Length: 253
Ligand SMILES: NC(=O)c1ccc[n+]([C@@H]2O[C@H](COP(=O)([O-])OP(=O)(O)OC[C@H]3O[C@@H](n4cnc5c(N)ncnc54)[C@H](OP(=O)(O)O)[C@@H]3O)[C@@H](O)[C@H]2O)c1
Image (tube, rainbow, N blue to C red):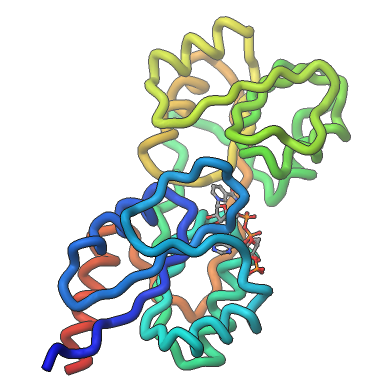
């Protein structure tokens, strides 16, 4: 008799989630469903069954886990997606589902880098100061409206979706990474950008902007990550996440 597969719900929204999802397409003994919030119009998806849209909070997610007999919940959402991660932790606790968080390590400043570290976007907008600056925002689209509180700066905003509100005169750059160091330097120099505001997302695909900012003399305002829920086991890359799932699968029988 074929043994029951390990049912996995993979919460996506990152490059790591996509890579893990692709690895699970052919993984023997594992039946995974890939879940996206549905906010990105053209998300990159693995060849797995996909569900879109919110669950309706922790209660809705717990109900989904129970209804679908999910054995493992893998939270491979963005390190700044604190709402879904808190819901995942609560739902896993409530239903006794194993929980793994996939989190790429945060960036650390190099010895020759000085970051202005802040806790949130309001603090980042404030940190820009009273003098007019030329600012590159690489923070996604959702939190751009926080910078309407500092309209005396000139903004270039890299995003995938149109923000709900932008500071006056802001220019939108619809660009998807990875970004090359030389292109980042060119962008900073072309617009005379003196300040980079970014979130400590971590990962190699977008690290080049930090090197470019340092080498072009732009200051870096770094919004630090919200804390992870304490109950999640953490894998720092896709290889570890896959190994965790395989060992979980082996340990079940
Ligand atoms: N925040 C960022 O900087 C960032 C950057 C890149 C990608 N993303 C991705 O974009 C998505 C939304 O980010 P966010 O910052 O809005 O997150 P959030 O504030 O933590 O989530 C808001 C709500 O969106 C729904 N949701 C989020 N991720 C989901 C998923 N994978 N599957 C189903 N529902 C999901 C949940 O709705 P319910 O409560 O109704 O279940 C959640 O409560 C995440 O999947 C995240 O990985 C975020």
